[in-house]
Length: 117
Ligand code: FES
Image (cartoon, rainbow, N blue to C red):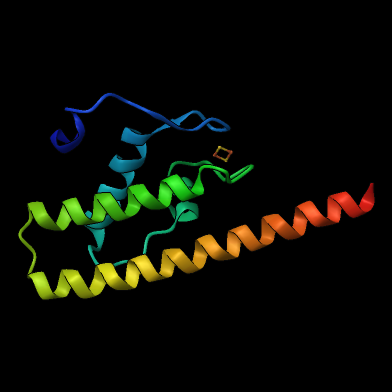
């Protein structure tokens, strides 16, 4: 267990799979230990846990956890600041694009369901 996350109460993030924020943060930290510059996405985190997104309603919160955990990870290890700033900008931009794509898919799905009756 990572001591970095023990101070906060546990929060359920994914109600479909019953996954908590601490479980997600632990997996993200393990991934960062393997390669601290890899792009982590919710699907990759869930795959590592042997789970998969069902409704994917939790994905925006998982993205926030990925960004926050990655920032905390580099802050604790005192990674060179300019490298972290560049990486975090790319990571945030990537996730913003992912959020927009997910919202677009949801709108299209909702529209097709309404059209079907
Ligand atoms: S709430 Fe996580 S997949 Fe549905």
